[in-house]
Length: 179
Image (cartoon, rainbow, N blue to C red; front, side, top):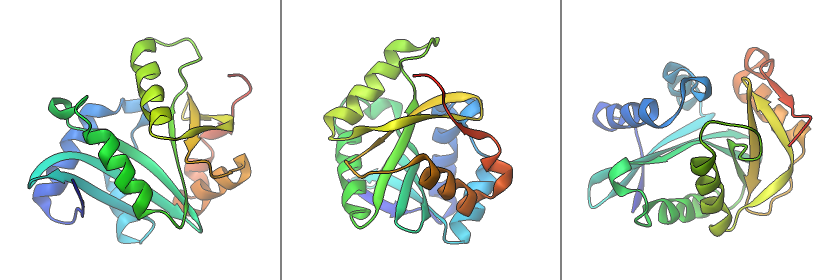
């Protein structure tokens, strides 16, 4: 598995296609915004590749010592074969000097895909991630946050969004009251 900085149109097209396929509309930022943040040095768009073939995507956003794995997806044909765990381990190494964390749809609130949410959470827990002590509402979707043991406060989390995306995006994020 390789993590390759996606700058060419062939890789970006594969990433864009999987991005729109893997993430619900309510959770997607405009792809043009992700490209803009990459160009500003606030984000990385990585193509996950095995033997030269596209395997998945990783989009990471930065602020100070924080690294948010904003989007992570494995190609459907490769899911359940270890590619995700391998890629996540490589991402953990890549961002070893940062507090690396991610958001997942909260599996403990009523939803229409409970099995998928539980499987996703179990995957990250098996990989060594642990829940952070707060949840957020992100554009109306309640999210649980996980990290590789790095502490993080809600204020630091919100600060990453304010720093990387500005107050327009931050206005759609709040501390969840339940979960």
